[in-house]
Length: 439
Image (cartoon, rainbow, N blue to C red; front, side, top):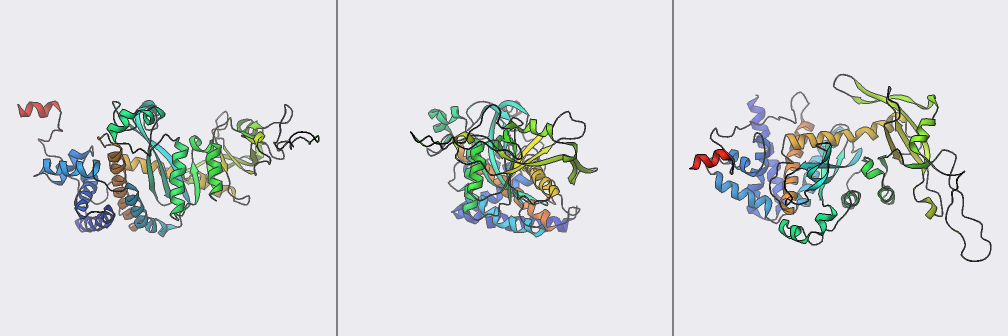
């Protein structure tokens, strides 16, 4: 290891964390903030509070453990203020390699046992790829092709959890928090970012969000451009077609205002439309470098009008792009997107920006594996929403380091920090080994 660089990284980290700590409201919160953040980098293995205390203060583990527990689980500081400060510090460094190109909505699951940890429920867990007991959180990230950073993070509560007064009280869920769908939570994060003047670029999301018509309409109402996934059953008016105009008024009753369709004039699914496209509509396009070769696939795009709910409208929806991916060798198309990118957007540019969602997958991988995003063992709403920005601020420092130094000089997954080993006699509280040792 280059110890000069290690010392320089540690010095920069101390300054970075100390500056962030200024938004916490009280001077006494600065030390536990810096300690917690440092522990997330240097502690090996699981990064729950006790291992952090063990590596930060090996001679005073119990006192440090209590200090960090209080700071993350009970201390009244704003997670939003911390995330805003992280963005203010890191975004300019990301933009050294170009402007923000995308704002990415996604959600991530944290497997969790029991039923009392805030928000835990049997639901789809992306980390496991199946239904499981877990917590799910919705995030908003900003990105360009060189780096990305989460700037918003909020826990999703199922309807059952949101209505359970006893569990809400036990977990300290604020009274103003009501049930919201994931797309609604995502729009709250987006509106907050827009109100703060954040550069948003093109909004990207998968079909869990993009298939929601209200979500897309809200993005348009905010003046944002999007490229969002949709399901193959989503219906559209094919190129050159649109819903029928309202019926002619006969002079009696209310004047008809709603658009119409009938059995011989109706929209079709995007899958059917894609399957009917001629061979020359498909192009092989590369969108980024992979480990061994460029990532490529076959794509087609056409101008369509989304059809959902148009029989309750008086005017057809505007045309937008339908982008379809059909990899070579597959029996049918595998992915579909709606996009409001301009008509003159080059095909390769459209594919390139739409596929930029891969950056948030890299974020989650590093956040979980390197700084312990899913390792918090507390049960409270406040603790969950304090641990996450602490992880994100630490990750933000690592992103900033990578923006400053070439990839060959700095690796986000390891940095240049000295990793501390837990003491040989360390046993987590409550483990069988710790009980036998105390007898």
